[in-house]
Image (tube, rainbow, N blue to C red; front, side, top):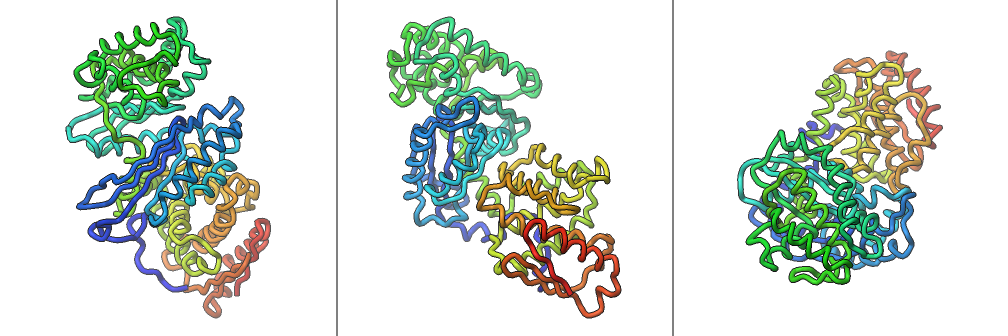
Length: 514
């Protein structure tokens, strides 16, 4: 097992310096609850220039019922769209593409099954991100599209959720994701497309109640400008401006006029406004209710609308990771500080885990950067549960990781790290691996074995306790060869390895050592 050299300062891709990205293509896919978006951009002179956009009204949220089951016809609509997106991605490097699912995919009971089909049609992996991560990424995209300085409030109305963020420059300070969106609200309060004053009041009241949860904190923090992103905000802005109810942006007086016009129409099919597309009409009234409630409850005088949103944020986040500005590393470091993790022990385990994975990666078929990332994160956090109690601390640690807000992490990566921490010691929890996507499960099991070995080899917590080890893997087996006579001088390690060989058999891995 050769020494790969110094540890990187973070776990992001050790790719090219900034100037080497010049001219490269990047793509982001947003599987929204209302629309699916694809944006392709070229990196030039330190910034991204969009060269293509595709948007399709899939209305995924319409097909997810209360039990989290996705209607077959909606699933097919989504898969057909992704197949078209997949053709547009041809010729773009895989590590220059990012695809995410939002509220509707979060709500699916068997979301991984749909994602497996979706990934096949798209030809690329898809991550499900949390509402808070969605909000952070939206803010990053919006921040790159505005030039004004100062503190700003950003609101993004989706099909199934609405995100609120207060930030300054490129940093999100406060983020919230609330469970209402234009598709969900239309289904609940405007079924059949019927619009009445009573239905409007009920929808407005439901949104206002949710907004009260965040209103006091957001007002206390304050903002100098309010920005809206997403199709709903753009549609409302276009209607009030094109009809002369506002000179620019969305104001309370403009919304009062729009509300009366919507109520007078009485049905979605009668919503004929300059600036409103036919595709947007079925969810326009519900979207307008949300905008109206935001203005009133948060006391906003005017909302300016930006064309930048989640997909642009995904692109800039991807660029940041490539150029070693990875928010995931910041999240890991924050947890290490918060839970008083012993940095030197984490570093030792991380270094050995990386040496082991580099030695067996090819023969075990592990994806290089993904495996390195998982092991770096889980190595640094494997003792996080000690803050709660030593007994069962691997279980405490897994719980903390499953339920913490980790900026930059997809739900998938967060679950993988929690699973690795849960299984880094004692009897492996075989059922925990069943919760992972089928394509990831064998990789995570093998990474768990590597983490277990790294933690075992550093049980004494000594700086120079592990010699050069030859590691080899084949099929479902891994073998370690230690320097001659070393194990005889380390009786505790020898016994631990004997026990470990029995434990790894429980998850289908044969461990041999000599």
